[in-house]
Image (cartoon, rainbow, N blue to C red; front, top):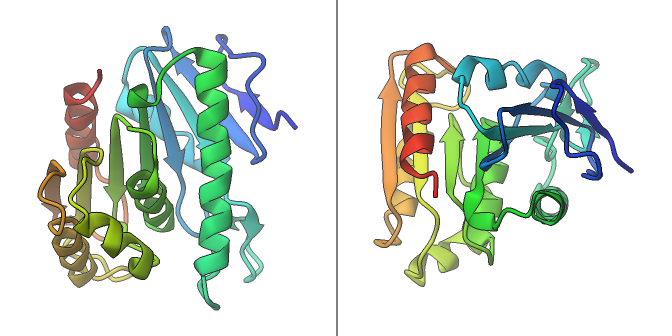
Length: 225
């Protein structure tokens, strides 16, 4: 299934996604940012980031989580918050893997040109996929996120093998994912001394601020291969 709704004149016509996905190209395609929304959000709502970041020559892809949330709102999730998430996390990882493979096939770009960005639950999947990926990535961007399935990721981090650069950001007034989650994630990433980790904190809650977007843009520009 194609499942990609394009919000720009330029498209990659043969690209496919098993997930409902919003696609947008600003200029030519020199890099790709796959952006994963948070719990209860939608791809269509999250896609506004493509305009706010104002990055040129980027293909933005906004896949939607594979499961509806079970609380009666029109949103999606990457894994359940109310049961053991391990199987659903792996399923979401596999769907992102499939999308990345399709991106490389139809753009001709190597994996080193692809960033994985996520907010909140989406950031957990971005970290999980990016740290486990057998192919190098341009970078992982975790906004108000956390590490899920630590029992799998900690041994990977402890191997101290090369991993993608990480942008790790959090609001110090976050009442959904408390700041302690940020420090825990930072400490876990520090298990691997080869990772270049950029950490930023902000005076904000569980959201994405203009200041944070500027810092993300700097990270992307600094890691565009």
